[in-house]
Length: 241
Image (cartoon, rainbow, N blue to C red; front, side, top):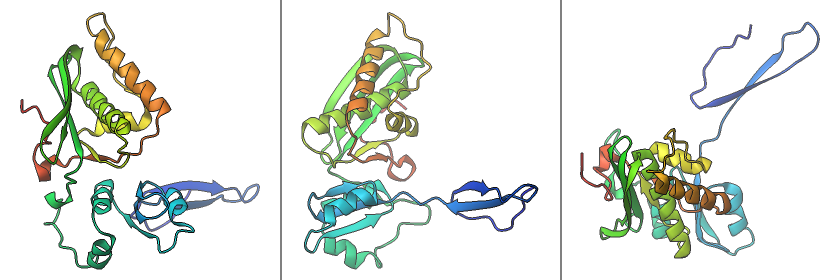
């Protein structure tokens, strides 16, 4: 039996190394690094990067490169729209939101919000994307018969990503209030249990197109969780609650 005291506060990964026949194996644990997002204001290719390795490629060998790490994709996207010196000078004195709250100041205005609606489960499904800065609707699909809300949320995110790619906007934030759909996009697969029928074939055709797009395109746009409890309903909401 392995015994040890002290529980790390971060997520951990365990592994052990055998030390010989009849001897107690040694158990190790290591803290898993928290996800960071890196903003490059001045470098070979300015933008928001998800790993230090990607960021390093943009700043190595670039005279007086300006870059900084952030704890969330939303913070990084907001920072990229701003001035490097403002974030460096104000990092230690930036005003904090109320305990447990995320300030609306964190919302990136030059971004896309997506949402879906479904009358029943399954039911008539539709989804759309809205430009947050002015509330302008960028796209709207549906209603389509016998879909689900999660499928609509998934399709809305991929639709926004594809649209932004065609427009040459690889760093624009896409907001979604669905963790499920974000997880499906990250895995590149719409993990629905909905049964395909002749009636909902248009829905599954869109799913197939979305999965194929994800398979051949690298996602560079930050996909950020819309904090409904702190910010209210997402701007793309259909207002049917």
